Image: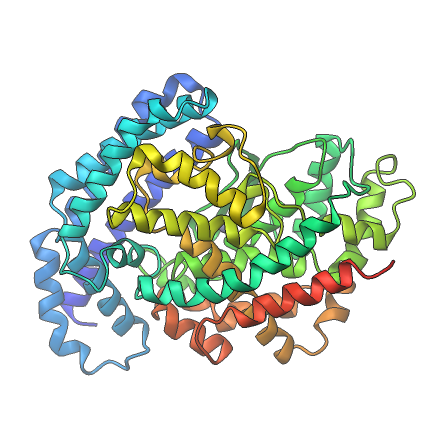
Length: 499
Ligand code: ZN
Protein backbone atom coordinates (compact mmCIF):
# COMPACT_ATOMS: atom_id res chain seq x y z
CA UNK A 1 0.00 0.00 0.00
CA UNK A 2 1.32 3.49 -0.79
CA UNK A 3 1.87 6.01 1.99
CA UNK A 4 -0.86 8.21 0.53
CA UNK A 5 -3.38 5.38 0.66
CA UNK A 6 -2.37 4.49 4.19
CA UNK A 7 -2.82 8.09 5.28
CA UNK A 8 -6.14 8.42 3.46
CA UNK A 9 -7.46 5.33 5.26
CA UNK A 10 -6.30 6.64 8.64
CA UNK A 11 -8.10 9.95 8.06
CA UNK A 12 -11.26 8.25 6.81
CA UNK A 13 -11.26 5.93 9.83
CA UNK A 14 -11.35 8.95 12.12
CA UNK A 15 -14.20 10.54 10.19
CA UNK A 16 -16.08 7.23 10.35
CA UNK A 17 -15.48 6.97 14.10
CA UNK A 18 -16.96 10.45 14.58
CA UNK A 19 -20.00 9.52 12.51
CA UNK A 20 -20.55 6.27 14.42
CA UNK A 21 -20.19 8.08 17.75
CA UNK A 22 -22.90 10.49 16.59
CA UNK A 23 -25.08 7.48 15.81
CA UNK A 24 -24.64 6.20 19.36
CA UNK A 25 -25.82 9.57 20.66
CA UNK A 26 -28.75 9.60 18.23
CA UNK A 27 -29.76 6.06 19.16
CA UNK A 28 -29.59 6.90 22.86
CA UNK A 29 -31.70 10.01 22.27
CA UNK A 30 -34.50 7.94 20.76
CA UNK A 31 -34.39 4.94 23.08
CA UNK A 32 -32.99 5.87 26.51
CA UNK A 33 -32.46 9.58 27.05
CA UNK A 34 -34.74 11.46 29.46
CA UNK A 35 -36.32 14.53 27.76
CA UNK A 36 -34.15 16.90 29.80
CA UNK A 37 -31.12 15.80 27.78
CA UNK A 38 -32.45 17.17 24.48
CA UNK A 39 -30.81 20.65 24.34
CA UNK A 40 -27.38 19.33 25.35
CA UNK A 41 -27.70 16.43 22.90
CA UNK A 42 -28.43 18.83 20.03
CA UNK A 43 -25.19 20.69 20.87
CA UNK A 44 -23.19 17.46 21.13
CA UNK A 45 -24.48 16.17 17.79
CA UNK A 46 -23.83 19.53 16.10
CA UNK A 47 -20.25 19.56 17.42
CA UNK A 48 -19.53 16.02 16.24
CA UNK A 49 -21.14 16.75 12.88
CA UNK A 50 -19.10 19.91 12.41
CA UNK A 51 -15.79 18.24 13.32
CA UNK A 52 -16.50 15.28 11.02
CA UNK A 53 -17.37 17.66 8.15
CA UNK A 54 -14.21 19.74 8.74
CA UNK A 55 -12.01 16.65 8.77
CA UNK A 56 -13.60 15.19 5.69
CA UNK A 57 -13.36 18.41 3.67
CA UNK A 58 -9.81 19.29 4.82
CA UNK A 59 -7.60 20.35 1.84
CA UNK A 60 -5.09 17.67 2.83
CA UNK A 61 -7.67 15.01 2.04
CA UNK A 62 -8.11 16.51 -1.42
CA UNK A 63 -4.33 16.47 -1.93
CA UNK A 64 -4.17 12.81 -0.92
CA UNK A 65 -6.89 11.98 -3.45
CA UNK A 66 -4.90 13.83 -6.13
CA UNK A 67 -1.71 11.99 -5.23
CA UNK A 68 -3.57 8.69 -5.56
CA UNK A 69 -4.64 9.25 -9.17
CA UNK A 70 -1.54 7.58 -10.60
CA UNK A 71 -1.72 4.67 -8.16
CA UNK A 72 -5.39 4.12 -8.97
CA UNK A 73 -4.61 3.12 -12.54
CA UNK A 74 -2.76 0.05 -11.35
CA UNK A 75 -5.64 -1.19 -9.22
CA UNK A 76 -8.32 -3.57 -10.47
CA UNK A 77 -11.42 -1.37 -10.86
CA UNK A 78 -13.54 -3.64 -8.64
CA UNK A 79 -10.92 -3.94 -5.88
CA UNK A 80 -11.71 -2.55 -2.45
CA UNK A 81 -8.99 0.09 -2.73
CA UNK A 82 -10.02 1.33 -6.18
CA UNK A 83 -13.64 1.57 -5.07
CA UNK A 84 -12.63 3.32 -1.86
CA UNK A 85 -10.68 6.00 -3.74
CA UNK A 86 -13.45 6.48 -6.30
CA UNK A 87 -16.29 6.74 -3.75
CA UNK A 88 -14.28 8.96 -1.40
CA UNK A 89 -13.41 11.31 -4.26
CA UNK A 90 -17.05 11.56 -5.22
CA UNK A 91 -18.19 12.22 -1.62
CA UNK A 92 -15.36 14.71 -1.14
CA UNK A 93 -16.10 16.65 -4.32
CA UNK A 94 -19.74 16.96 -3.26
CA UNK A 95 -18.94 17.89 0.35
CA UNK A 96 -16.48 20.69 -0.50
CA UNK A 97 -19.04 22.45 -2.70
CA UNK A 98 -21.23 23.22 0.30
CA UNK A 99 -19.95 26.15 2.41
CA UNK A 100 -19.55 25.29 6.09
CA UNK A 101 -21.84 28.21 6.95
CA UNK A 102 -24.69 26.79 4.82
CA UNK A 103 -24.14 23.30 6.21
CA UNK A 104 -24.34 24.65 9.77
CA UNK A 105 -27.45 26.67 8.95
CA UNK A 106 -29.13 23.58 7.50
CA UNK A 107 -28.33 21.56 10.64
CA UNK A 108 -29.64 24.35 12.86
CA UNK A 109 -32.85 24.79 10.85
CA UNK A 110 -33.38 21.03 10.91
CA UNK A 111 -33.03 20.89 14.67
CA UNK A 112 -35.39 23.84 15.23
CA UNK A 113 -37.76 22.53 12.57
CA UNK A 114 -37.94 19.15 14.24
CA UNK A 115 -38.98 20.64 17.56
CA UNK A 116 -41.56 22.89 15.87
CA UNK A 117 -42.92 19.94 13.89
CA UNK A 118 -43.38 17.77 17.02
CA UNK A 119 -45.47 20.54 18.58
CA UNK A 120 -47.35 21.44 15.39
CA UNK A 121 -48.25 17.83 14.72
CA UNK A 122 -49.48 17.32 18.30
CA UNK A 123 -51.73 20.37 17.90
CA UNK A 124 -52.50 19.67 14.21
CA UNK A 125 -51.40 23.24 13.54
CA UNK A 126 -49.82 23.61 10.09
CA UNK A 127 -49.49 27.44 10.26
CA UNK A 128 -47.22 27.02 13.33
CA UNK A 129 -44.91 24.80 11.25
CA UNK A 130 -45.05 26.87 8.05
CA UNK A 131 -42.19 29.34 8.83
CA UNK A 132 -39.85 26.40 9.53
CA UNK A 133 -40.89 24.67 6.33
CA UNK A 134 -40.26 27.90 4.42
CA UNK A 135 -36.80 28.17 5.96
CA UNK A 136 -35.96 24.56 5.11
CA UNK A 137 -37.08 24.98 1.51
CA UNK A 138 -35.08 28.20 1.16
CA UNK A 139 -31.97 26.39 2.42
CA UNK A 140 -32.60 23.41 0.14
CA UNK A 141 -32.74 25.79 -2.84
CA UNK A 142 -29.46 27.39 -1.74
CA UNK A 143 -27.99 23.90 -1.44
CA UNK A 144 -29.05 23.09 -5.01
CA UNK A 145 -27.25 26.22 -6.19
CA UNK A 146 -23.96 24.87 -4.82
CA UNK A 147 -23.87 22.33 -7.66
CA UNK A 148 -23.59 22.57 -11.44
CA UNK A 149 -27.05 23.06 -12.94
CA UNK A 150 -28.49 19.57 -13.30
CA UNK A 151 -31.16 18.37 -15.74
CA UNK A 152 -33.70 19.38 -13.11
CA UNK A 153 -32.97 21.13 -9.79
CA UNK A 154 -34.51 18.21 -7.85
CA UNK A 155 -31.80 15.91 -9.28
CA UNK A 156 -29.31 17.46 -6.84
CA UNK A 157 -31.45 16.52 -3.83
CA UNK A 158 -32.16 13.00 -5.09
CA UNK A 159 -28.49 12.30 -5.66
CA UNK A 160 -27.78 12.57 -1.91
CA UNK A 161 -29.99 9.55 -1.26
CA UNK A 162 -29.97 7.62 -4.54
CA UNK A 163 -26.68 8.30 -6.27
CA UNK A 164 -27.05 8.78 -9.99
CA UNK A 165 -30.85 8.63 -10.09
CA UNK A 166 -32.42 11.65 -11.82
CA UNK A 167 -35.89 13.08 -11.50
CA UNK A 168 -36.59 11.74 -14.99
CA UNK A 169 -35.50 8.24 -13.88
CA UNK A 170 -37.86 8.38 -10.91
CA UNK A 171 -40.70 9.62 -13.08
CA UNK A 172 -40.08 6.75 -15.50
CA UNK A 173 -40.67 4.30 -12.63
CA UNK A 174 -43.47 6.18 -10.87
CA UNK A 175 -45.66 6.90 -13.90
CA UNK A 176 -46.36 3.25 -14.80
CA UNK A 177 -46.47 2.43 -11.09
CA UNK A 178 -49.19 4.99 -10.45
CA UNK A 179 -51.08 3.96 -13.54
CA UNK A 180 -50.99 0.34 -12.41
CA UNK A 181 -51.80 0.99 -8.77
CA UNK A 182 -54.78 3.34 -9.11
CA UNK A 183 -57.14 0.72 -10.58
CA UNK A 184 -55.93 -1.93 -8.09
CA UNK A 185 -56.67 0.40 -5.19
CA UNK A 186 -60.05 1.38 -6.62
CA UNK A 187 -61.01 -2.29 -7.00
CA UNK A 188 -59.97 -3.07 -3.43
CA UNK A 189 -61.85 -0.05 -2.04
CA UNK A 190 -65.08 -1.27 -3.63
CA UNK A 191 -64.87 -4.51 -1.70
CA UNK A 192 -64.89 -2.68 1.63
CA UNK A 193 -62.51 -3.24 4.52
CA UNK A 194 -63.34 -6.17 6.73
CA UNK A 195 -61.25 -5.69 9.89
CA UNK A 196 -60.47 -9.42 9.89
CA UNK A 197 -59.72 -11.61 12.86
CA UNK A 198 -56.59 -9.83 14.15
CA UNK A 199 -58.22 -7.65 16.79
CA UNK A 200 -56.05 -8.59 19.76
CA UNK A 201 -55.44 -7.88 22.49
CA UNK A 202 -51.80 -8.80 21.88
CA UNK A 203 -50.01 -8.15 25.21
CA UNK A 204 -46.71 -6.33 24.69
CA UNK A 205 -44.61 -8.88 26.61
CA UNK A 206 -45.97 -11.74 24.51
CA UNK A 207 -45.28 -9.71 21.37
CA UNK A 208 -41.73 -9.19 22.53
CA UNK A 209 -41.27 -12.94 23.02
CA UNK A 210 -42.75 -13.69 19.61
CA UNK A 211 -40.48 -11.11 17.97
CA UNK A 212 -37.46 -12.63 19.76
CA UNK A 213 -38.42 -16.07 18.46
CA UNK A 214 -38.91 -14.86 14.90
CA UNK A 215 -35.82 -12.63 14.73
CA UNK A 216 -33.57 -15.31 16.25
CA UNK A 217 -34.77 -17.65 13.54
CA UNK A 218 -34.03 -15.03 10.87
CA UNK A 219 -30.46 -14.49 12.11
CA UNK A 220 -30.62 -11.99 14.99
CA UNK A 221 -27.82 -12.98 17.37
CA UNK A 222 -27.52 -11.18 20.74
CA UNK A 223 -23.73 -11.21 20.38
CA UNK A 224 -24.07 -8.53 17.68
CA UNK A 225 -27.65 -7.26 17.78
CA UNK A 226 -29.98 -5.41 20.19
CA UNK A 227 -33.70 -4.69 20.01
CA UNK A 228 -35.14 -1.74 21.96
CA UNK A 229 -38.32 0.30 22.00
CA UNK A 230 -38.59 3.67 20.23
CA UNK A 231 -41.54 5.95 19.42
CA UNK A 232 -40.50 6.02 15.75
CA UNK A 233 -38.88 2.64 14.95
CA UNK A 234 -35.56 2.64 13.08
CA UNK A 235 -32.36 0.62 12.68
CA UNK A 236 -28.84 1.92 13.13
CA UNK A 237 -25.33 0.48 13.08
CA UNK A 238 -22.35 1.31 15.24
CA UNK A 239 -20.12 -1.34 13.64
CA UNK A 240 -20.51 -4.37 11.38
CA UNK A 241 -20.82 -6.44 14.56
CA UNK A 242 -23.03 -3.98 16.49
CA UNK A 243 -26.52 -3.62 15.05
CA UNK A 244 -29.35 -1.79 16.81
CA UNK A 245 -33.03 -2.31 15.95
CA UNK A 246 -36.05 -0.65 17.50
CA UNK A 247 -39.76 -1.35 17.44
CA UNK A 248 -42.90 -0.17 19.21
CA UNK A 249 -45.76 -2.25 20.57
CA UNK A 250 -49.45 -1.63 20.00
CA UNK A 251 -51.64 -4.19 21.76
CA UNK A 252 -54.38 -3.91 19.11
CA UNK A 253 -52.40 -5.39 16.24
CA UNK A 254 -49.23 -7.22 15.13
CA UNK A 255 -47.59 -4.24 13.42
CA UNK A 256 -44.61 -4.50 15.77
CA UNK A 257 -43.70 -7.94 14.41
CA UNK A 258 -43.67 -6.81 10.79
CA UNK A 259 -41.97 -3.56 11.80
CA UNK A 260 -39.25 -5.59 13.54
CA UNK A 261 -38.81 -7.77 10.41
CA UNK A 262 -38.51 -4.56 8.37
CA UNK A 263 -35.78 -3.17 10.63
CA UNK A 264 -34.11 -6.60 10.64
CA UNK A 265 -33.77 -6.29 6.86
CA UNK A 266 -31.93 -2.99 7.30
CA UNK A 267 -29.80 -4.47 10.07
CA UNK A 268 -28.90 -7.61 8.14
CA UNK A 269 -27.63 -5.51 5.22
CA UNK A 270 -25.20 -3.66 7.49
CA UNK A 271 -24.30 -6.81 9.44
CA UNK A 272 -23.23 -8.56 6.22
CA UNK A 273 -21.00 -5.81 4.81
CA UNK A 274 -17.44 -7.09 4.37
CA UNK A 275 -15.46 -6.44 7.59
CA UNK A 276 -12.59 -5.35 5.30
CA UNK A 277 -14.60 -2.20 4.52
CA UNK A 278 -15.06 -1.24 8.15
CA UNK A 279 -14.08 2.32 9.16
CA UNK A 280 -14.26 3.51 5.55
CA UNK A 281 -17.03 5.32 3.62
CA UNK A 282 -17.78 1.96 1.95
CA UNK A 283 -19.09 0.32 5.15
CA UNK A 284 -22.83 0.65 4.61
CA UNK A 285 -25.70 0.26 2.17
CA UNK A 286 -25.15 1.47 -1.39
CA UNK A 287 -28.23 3.73 -1.43
CA UNK A 288 -31.39 4.35 0.55
CA UNK A 289 -33.43 2.67 -2.16
CA UNK A 290 -31.42 -0.55 -2.04
CA UNK A 291 -31.45 -0.42 1.74
CA UNK A 292 -35.22 -0.16 1.68
CA UNK A 293 -35.39 -3.06 -0.79
CA UNK A 294 -33.91 -5.22 1.95
CA UNK A 295 -36.28 -4.11 4.71
CA UNK A 296 -39.30 -4.48 2.44
CA UNK A 297 -38.09 -7.90 1.31
CA UNK A 298 -37.99 -9.27 4.85
CA UNK A 299 -41.15 -7.47 5.95
CA UNK A 300 -43.34 -8.27 2.95
CA UNK A 301 -41.92 -10.83 0.54
CA UNK A 302 -40.83 -13.10 3.38
CA UNK A 303 -43.01 -11.87 6.27
CA UNK A 304 -46.35 -11.59 4.51
CA UNK A 305 -45.69 -14.43 2.06
CA UNK A 306 -47.61 -17.70 2.00
CA UNK A 307 -44.65 -19.98 2.74
CA UNK A 308 -43.41 -18.10 5.80
CA UNK A 309 -46.98 -17.75 7.05
CA UNK A 310 -47.21 -21.55 7.25
CA UNK A 311 -44.29 -21.47 9.68
CA UNK A 312 -45.45 -18.34 11.53
CA UNK A 313 -49.10 -19.24 12.10
CA UNK A 314 -48.60 -21.95 14.75
CA UNK A 315 -45.84 -19.92 16.40
CA UNK A 316 -48.13 -16.87 16.63
CA UNK A 317 -51.02 -18.97 17.92
CA UNK A 318 -48.83 -20.33 20.68
CA UNK A 319 -47.86 -16.75 21.58
CA UNK A 320 -51.47 -15.50 21.67
CA UNK A 321 -53.69 -18.49 22.53
CA UNK A 322 -56.67 -16.25 23.38
CA UNK A 323 -56.54 -13.60 20.65
CA UNK A 324 -55.88 -16.16 17.89
CA UNK A 325 -58.25 -18.88 19.12
CA UNK A 326 -60.07 -20.32 16.13
CA UNK A 327 -58.06 -18.24 13.61
CA UNK A 328 -56.94 -20.77 11.02
CA UNK A 329 -53.95 -20.35 8.71
CA UNK A 330 -55.96 -19.02 5.77
CA UNK A 331 -57.72 -16.40 7.91
CA UNK A 332 -54.40 -15.41 9.48
CA UNK A 333 -52.74 -15.10 6.08
CA UNK A 334 -55.53 -12.93 4.73
CA UNK A 335 -55.56 -10.77 7.85
CA UNK A 336 -51.83 -9.97 7.75
CA UNK A 337 -52.28 -9.06 4.09
CA UNK A 338 -55.37 -6.91 4.50
CA UNK A 339 -55.53 -4.04 1.99
CA UNK A 340 -57.31 -0.86 3.09
CA UNK A 341 -56.62 2.66 1.83
CA UNK A 342 -55.66 4.66 4.89
CA UNK A 343 -54.23 8.00 6.00
CA UNK A 344 -50.79 7.14 7.33
CA UNK A 345 -47.90 6.07 5.09
CA UNK A 346 -46.01 4.03 7.67
CA UNK A 347 -49.11 1.94 8.38
CA UNK A 348 -50.05 1.45 4.73
CA UNK A 349 -50.39 -2.02 3.19
CA UNK A 350 -48.36 -3.28 0.23
CA UNK A 351 -50.84 -2.11 -2.39
CA UNK A 352 -51.50 1.46 -1.25
CA UNK A 353 -48.02 2.21 0.11
CA UNK A 354 -46.37 3.52 -3.05
CA UNK A 355 -49.20 5.96 -3.75
CA UNK A 356 -48.42 7.66 -0.42
CA UNK A 357 -44.85 8.06 -1.65
CA UNK A 358 -45.73 9.19 -5.18
CA UNK A 359 -47.94 11.90 -3.68
CA UNK A 360 -45.02 13.27 -1.67
CA UNK A 361 -42.66 13.11 -4.67
CA UNK A 362 -45.10 15.09 -6.81
CA UNK A 363 -45.56 17.74 -4.11
CA UNK A 364 -41.81 18.04 -3.49
CA UNK A 365 -41.21 18.56 -7.19
CA UNK A 366 -43.80 21.33 -7.32
CA UNK A 367 -42.28 22.97 -4.24
CA UNK A 368 -38.72 22.86 -5.59
CA UNK A 369 -39.78 24.03 -9.06
CA UNK A 370 -41.77 26.88 -7.53
CA UNK A 371 -45.20 25.77 -8.70
CA UNK A 372 -46.77 25.39 -5.27
CA UNK A 373 -47.00 27.97 -2.48
CA UNK A 374 -46.15 26.33 0.83
CA UNK A 375 -49.21 27.77 2.53
CA UNK A 376 -51.34 25.85 0.01
CA UNK A 377 -49.61 22.56 0.76
CA UNK A 378 -52.30 21.06 3.08
CA UNK A 379 -54.98 21.68 0.48
CA UNK A 380 -52.88 20.10 -2.28
CA UNK A 381 -52.10 17.14 -0.02
CA UNK A 382 -55.71 16.51 0.91
CA UNK A 383 -56.92 16.77 -2.69
CA UNK A 384 -54.41 14.15 -3.82
CA UNK A 385 -55.20 11.79 -0.93
CA UNK A 386 -58.83 11.86 -2.02
CA UNK A 387 -57.91 11.48 -5.65
CA UNK A 388 -55.39 8.60 -5.31
CA UNK A 389 -56.67 6.73 -2.25
CA UNK A 390 -60.26 7.89 -1.86
CA UNK A 391 -59.47 8.96 1.68
CA UNK A 392 -60.70 12.17 3.35
CA UNK A 393 -58.01 13.77 5.51
CA UNK A 394 -59.63 14.90 8.80
CA UNK A 395 -56.81 17.17 9.99
CA UNK A 396 -53.20 18.08 9.18
CA UNK A 397 -51.78 15.80 11.88
CA UNK A 398 -53.13 12.87 9.84
CA UNK A 399 -52.19 14.59 6.59
CA UNK A 400 -49.37 16.90 5.65
CA UNK A 401 -47.78 16.90 9.14
CA UNK A 402 -47.56 13.11 9.58
CA UNK A 403 -43.94 12.54 8.44
CA UNK A 404 -40.76 13.87 10.00
CA UNK A 405 -38.75 14.40 6.79
CA UNK A 406 -39.72 17.96 5.82
CA UNK A 407 -39.08 19.19 9.35
CA UNK A 408 -35.42 18.26 8.89
CA UNK A 409 -35.17 19.60 5.33
CA UNK A 410 -34.70 16.14 3.81
CA UNK A 411 -36.27 16.73 0.40
CA UNK A 412 -35.53 14.03 -2.17
CA UNK A 413 -35.63 11.23 0.38
CA UNK A 414 -39.23 10.01 -0.01
CA UNK A 415 -38.88 8.54 -3.53
CA UNK A 416 -36.37 5.99 -2.21
CA UNK A 417 -39.11 4.25 -0.22
CA UNK A 418 -41.04 3.39 -3.36
CA UNK A 419 -37.91 2.69 -5.43
CA UNK A 420 -36.83 0.24 -2.72
CA UNK A 421 -40.25 -1.39 -2.68
CA UNK A 422 -40.16 -1.85 -6.46
CA UNK A 423 -36.62 -3.27 -6.34
CA UNK A 424 -37.52 -5.62 -3.49
CA UNK A 425 -39.72 -7.65 -5.85
CA UNK A 426 -37.09 -7.71 -8.61
CA UNK A 427 -34.56 -8.98 -6.06
CA UNK A 428 -37.04 -11.49 -4.65
CA UNK A 429 -37.69 -12.91 -8.11
CA UNK A 430 -33.95 -13.21 -8.75
CA UNK A 431 -33.54 -15.00 -5.40
CA UNK A 432 -36.30 -17.43 -6.31
CA UNK A 433 -34.65 -18.21 -9.63
CA UNK A 434 -31.40 -19.01 -7.81
CA UNK A 435 -33.02 -20.89 -4.93
CA UNK A 436 -35.77 -23.04 -6.46
CA UNK A 437 -36.32 -24.66 -3.08
CA UNK A 438 -36.92 -21.32 -1.30
CA UNK A 439 -40.60 -21.80 -0.44
CA UNK A 440 -39.93 -25.14 1.25
CA UNK A 441 -37.11 -23.55 3.23
CA UNK A 442 -39.23 -20.62 4.43
CA UNK A 443 -42.05 -22.96 5.36
CA UNK A 444 -39.58 -24.87 7.52
CA UNK A 445 -38.29 -21.65 9.11
CA UNK A 446 -34.93 -21.96 7.30
CA UNK A 447 -33.41 -18.68 6.16
CA UNK A 448 -29.69 -19.47 5.78
CA UNK A 449 -29.65 -19.82 2.01
CA UNK A 450 -31.65 -16.66 1.39
CA UNK A 451 -29.43 -14.73 3.80
CA UNK A 452 -26.31 -16.05 2.11
CA UNK A 453 -27.64 -15.23 -1.37
CA UNK A 454 -28.33 -11.65 -0.31
CA UNK A 455 -24.97 -11.38 1.45
CA UNK A 456 -22.88 -12.62 -1.44
CA UNK A 457 -24.82 -10.74 -4.14
CA UNK A 458 -25.43 -7.41 -2.42
CA UNK A 459 -24.57 -6.86 1.23
CA UNK A 460 -20.90 -7.82 1.24
CA UNK A 461 -20.06 -5.10 -1.33
CA UNK A 462 -21.16 -2.21 0.88
CA UNK A 463 -20.94 1.01 -1.15
CA UNK A 464 -18.34 -0.29 -3.61
CA UNK A 465 -20.56 -0.01 -6.68
CA UNK A 466 -23.07 2.63 -7.80
CA UNK A 467 -26.71 1.73 -7.06
CA UNK A 468 -27.73 1.09 -10.69
CA UNK A 469 -24.63 -1.04 -11.26
CA UNK A 470 -25.32 -2.98 -8.06
CA UNK A 471 -28.91 -3.71 -9.06
CA UNK A 472 -27.80 -4.76 -12.54
CA UNK A 473 -25.30 -7.23 -11.04
CA UNK A 474 -27.94 -8.61 -8.72
CA UNK A 475 -31.03 -8.95 -10.92
CA UNK A 476 -29.56 -8.61 -14.43
CA UNK A 477 -31.41 -5.42 -15.40
CA UNK A 478 -32.44 -1.89 -14.43
CA UNK A 479 -35.19 -0.90 -12.02
CA UNK A 480 -38.63 -1.82 -13.36
CA UNK A 481 -42.09 -1.40 -11.82
CA UNK A 482 -43.47 -4.35 -13.83
CA UNK A 483 -42.54 -7.20 -11.47
CA UNK A 484 -43.95 -5.34 -8.46
CA UNK A 485 -47.27 -4.65 -10.20
CA UNK A 486 -47.46 -8.27 -11.35
CA UNK A 487 -46.77 -9.49 -7.85
CA UNK A 488 -49.50 -7.28 -6.36
CA UNK A 489 -52.08 -8.27 -8.95
CA UNK A 490 -51.36 -11.95 -8.29
CA UNK A 491 -51.59 -11.49 -4.55
CA UNK A 492 -54.90 -9.61 -4.75
CA UNK A 493 -56.39 -12.31 -6.95
CA UNK A 494 -55.36 -14.85 -4.37
CA UNK A 495 -56.55 -12.82 -1.37
CA UNK A 496 -59.97 -12.15 -2.84
CA UNK A 497 -60.54 -15.64 -4.18
CA UNK A 498 -63.29 -17.47 -2.28
CA UNK A 499 -61.71 -19.09 0.81
ZN1 ZN B 1 -37.03 1.15 6.11
